[in-house]
Length: 254
Image (cartoon, rainbow, N blue to C red):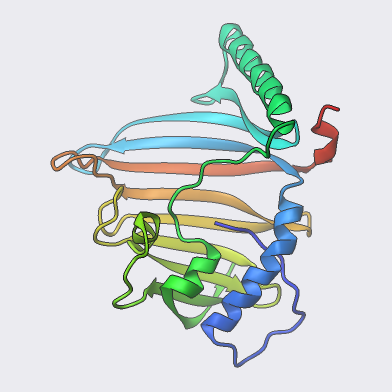
């Protein structure tokens, strides 16, 4: 999900959902540049439940999300809230140095790209979904429009990736002064290739240093389906903290 900071100073009273989304998409261009200048700490927790819905096990990893050769890099720093052993810490350092060397070599040939998954982008909301203003809510200190986006009725997917995107609905809370997304919830629909219907992905965002809107948490909660009879209930929680603005260019080795 993309991040944003607003451009328009006021709160128009007669905007449609598409109008709000267009302003949100435009404002996003500014915030992405700001957000890319921040390092942070990311804690990833996996929780598994038994057939009665009771917690069976959990594990966590904590990463420093830093810049390495000008691109973000997740450096493992702890497991289950315990620091790495000296042996594993040395292994992590070795892997990071290897990645740095590969990125330096790659930069001389072509840009580095990251693998994307088939989740709906902001632009997809306008192209593939029917969106409406579902009301207004107070989210923390922010008053937000609630925008509900559902797949267009009768929409025929042009390719496999588009088909996957149409197996979810999205509800967004867009801050009314800055056109910033402060929260979104994705709900899996029938035909989703990974999650059973009703599974949710919920993200929260905050304004950091009165500068950039950053994702502070992401929770994936639902049943996965790997095969006909394999449907584990899993919750994955991501919590971001310790945001620090950094000079990205200083991490690029000449």
